[in-house]
Amino acid sequence: MTTTEPRLTSLAHGGGCGCKLAPAVLRDILKDLPQAAPFANLMVGTETSDDAAVWRLNDEQALVATTDFFMPVVDDPFDFGQIAATNALSDVYAMGATPIFALALVGMPVNVLSTETIGRILQGGASVCAAAGIPVAGGHSIDSVEPIYGLVALGLVHPDHVLTNRGARPGDVLILTKGLGVGVLSAAFKSGWLDDAGYAALIASTTQLNTLGARLAGREGVHAVTDVTGFGLLGHALEMARGSGLTVELTAGPPLLDGVEALAATGVRTGASGR
Image (cartoon, rainbow, N blue to C red):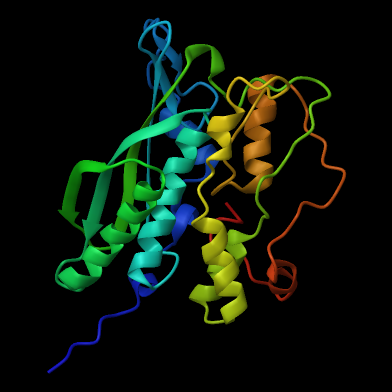
């Protein structure tokens, strides 16, 4: 007798970074937490909603630390693991750092999903870490109602070369390193409207490591960097503007992944778009 497992996306009320709390809700939750000002070695904390925390170790090294996890955006377990791991490591690269190792965060409905399926999710994440040249050195797992996977990711950068989302200067040009529209493609997939070409575009973008970030550290003319994920171009551009005390002006349509414009025109929206 064989048992047919449910689609991964059917087990989640939201997928990917669409699971994030709305920015206004998050600010309200965090507003009464103490500031980290007394810690002299904390170079980057929560003040400007940056991609990761940064702690000065010595004159030559700073530790970059972040965590990121979410529920499935696709049904293939290996692809889901790859996407989640790539997303987590991206926050390290966005600070100009090079990853050194990761820890896995795993929450799975063990009475619904087989150990083989859960194992494939972890294998997908481990394959991305291997491509980044780092190990998955441990982690934590729980029995959860919804499938959740992600990483704690750690990296190193020179203290003088840390990239933040608050360093933009008047006249800077905003450069995108990937096309936009992953959220629309994933929403179309969950609704059964995404064709094979669209799925290929989704996977190609979400599993491409943003290693460029580490190469930008210390480069002249690069003043601010951020990772565009769940809050979209507008949300993350707003964080950069607020952190830098500037205004962002968008004068041209941003590059979109193939098929995104057509899907959006039919009304496909991400679950977080309204929030």
